[in-house]
Image (tube, rainbow, N blue to C red; front, side, top):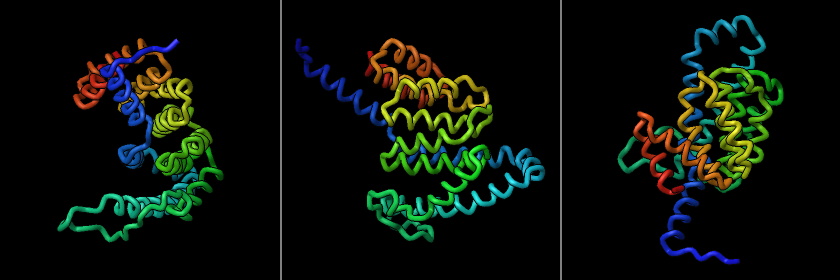
Length: 249
């Protein structure tokens, strides 16, 4: 039996599909979130980290190796982004040589991913491994490789209730959703939402949950979550939730 869809409904469906795609894809804003939150982790937790490092030589060594690997990765990413989005004319440019992307992850990032992979393989329980997994996932998601990103993020131990583990879970949910596994993604984001330490990620995690519930055909649950977010004081997230809510109703 066929179902006729009028033009207005078709436009609404197309709009929703577009928003779903936007919500699941790994964009530049996600890489900025990773960088900002890793920096926040290092700065806010500086005193604790310093104490931990003095007590744990192995972790200190891993962190030292991570900073070297991170520097190479970020420089490569910056060169790729500069080629894609060059600064406006007249604006002072950083001393970075733009590198146009070939569309191939291996060719574009070259050897910069291997040190991060080595840290992840060497000590998946460490903080350095969690941060390495986040960067590896970011790179692979940006090249439409969500399955690989899921593998990196699942390899580390994110069971503890700390900020970094919450970020790993949050990005794991994104990678799962990109892999068309919304059922597991919503459960992963639920763990983020249940963590007080990850409270700043709760609204974003809820928005992604709503998109996944809509993708799974559970409009009632999607509407419920979007209504919750639309009532938040954060005007930008509330506006986004309100827009999505109109699309699913």
